[in-house]
Image (tube, rainbow, N blue to C red; front, side):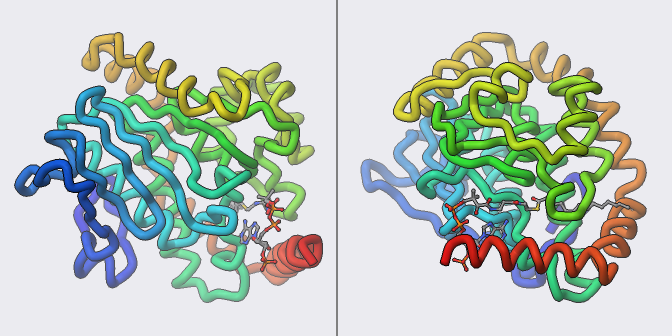
Length: 305
Ligand SMILES: CCCCCCCC/C=C\C=C\CC(=O)SCCNC(=O)CCNC(=O)[C@H](O)C(C)(C)COP(=O)(O)OP(=O)(O)OC[C@H]1O[C@@H](n2cnc3c(N)ncnc32)[C@H](O)[C@@H]1OP(=O)(O)O
């Protein structure tokens, strides 16, 4: 399918991208012809793993990840998120999106480790392209993106939150956030490191990335990883208030400023996307890396039992 950043999606999505999306209506009125969920605000559109609740009156859509049990970023979830974001972005009714979780206690567990273990290079190539695509689409979105972080937010979950303009985290000591890749025996790609540095500064990133730190809410606020920590039942309402603050600014000026702030970071990846994919594939295919990931995944599974 034709995406600005040129990523290729799984065959089924390429053939019929919208087949991944299942439109439903709330029944208050008919959906706008050919529209993407705008118009009267009564329409729900989304897909199996991404629920989109649009409110045309405010111009804000709430996008909920629902890939139980832990919203791990499978190829399907990544693809559906990109398609849903594109759909909202193309509908001029909307100026902002709130990203949140429909799964209890977890915003997202990050990249789906089963996508990174025991697969072939072609799969890793397709998967990493989809990771890059989601990051580029969120990081460079012209919409205001607010992360309403209502659960644990490690690694890839944190990456999605970092790409947003603003982050609101629920005040629950179990809801850790951060980039813990080193604890899995892997490294963070340069473009995510850059995003971390842009958010919390060089020294804090240097420590947190090497140590694989996962911050509880109070520390995440202190280090500047999130903008607000609020009681769990106020995460969405606070995200909506934040959104209103951002939407009070004229779009064109805010968008130009966002581009000015983010372009250099995104361009670094755009200039070397293929090389980044090759690096990733050769890295993830190493026996030692595969072993580390399998040990980590096994520990996760045993921890449960
Ligand atoms: C030269 C260099 C080039 C550049 C190279 C770049 C390389 C970069 C590569 C990769 C980058 C990766 C970033 C990532 O995102 S890796 C993923 C890291 N994620 C984590 O570490 C989080 C792991 N999960 C947890 O800590 C917990 O599950 C938590 C999210 C806190 C939820 O806890 P809880 O509610 O108690 O749920 P369970 O732990 O019981 O989990 C339920 C089942 O889900 C499975 N699970 C959990 N996380 C994942 C995951 N990320 N992927 C796949 N599956 C996951 C878990 O095993 C349980 O499964 P089961 O029911 O079968 O036991």
